[in-house]
Image (cartoon, rainbow, N blue to C red; front, top):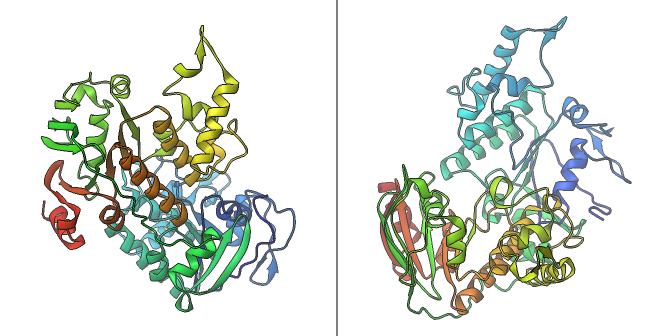
Length: 477
């Protein structure tokens, strides 16, 4: 069961936070609200009237709009065409462009972003600007309820503040806002009330002013989380990974650093600093545009992903949907594709043995799924991330390149991943940890390097950094 006897009330001019672990049922509930799924039981009321949409277009016309974490836009169309898609102003099959453009411009002006012109192609916009296009679409349809599903997971900090300003404007217009997020500090900034889902059921609700973070987390995970950042003792050993003057076609630029066995080395930087590009160059994904040297235990592996895997590297990329996982393939395929040798005999695979090994990894990482044969695309974001991490563990990687490994993951699962990273360091693994979330870098990493404009500016032991120092270094360049 994805949902069972869930109840909530969203009021006009109020922000309701919907909180829960990955797989708790939040996305399914939103699909029911949007008309993508039909409920098996229960009722919904919108403005006191029965609400049972036959599909997303009916829900949108009734006044329910959802801004999904994975933005639902047509990138090759203009801002205007995306906003008006499905609700075009037309007469006898001819679109009334002048009327449409006036409505679109009004919505963009109301959002406070007149620089977003109706004729801009969406593919040319930043993630933050694309999100505004989604919100403008909701305004055009005169939404009564706007749902934000993990809206800040891919936004830089300045766009997050702009989003919060827009949410306050929606509140001032007496629009009900449902806000889904895993960041409790973010929820406290924008929301008034909260509802917690666990295993498809409502397990708690109330005013955020009357609740502590600890009580909310305990409701989410069904147990006491003693600490979000569990400490796992580990010892730093000899240098394992050495990078010398690593450069790409655009980013990074002459980056050099060294990571030891048993060390968790954090990389921080603002959007465009070159953190992801550095990891891609390290893993041989941008081999044709790379200069410099990468040494593993003093040896230089060939500049290809296959050679880097053989040298002991494993890469968990930040975009699990587009690059990190084959969404239409099974858990077992995704988890074992980078290392099939243990199951190969005469060109055939020992499927039962492969399934059993996959089930072991699923138990170790607490992956919620029907079984190894389930398609990865059917899992929640957090469980997909666990599969991506399990893959590099399965291939016996000694050097783990983790790019935003906790993005879009709930608090309980984050704590599990932090503990796992600590345990891997205690086993002597070498870990390169990229994150935009400073509290986790400060709590998890032994060493932190700050990047700006493709360059590694400064590296220090974590104890010698403060969050203000890190931000100041990243901004100053």
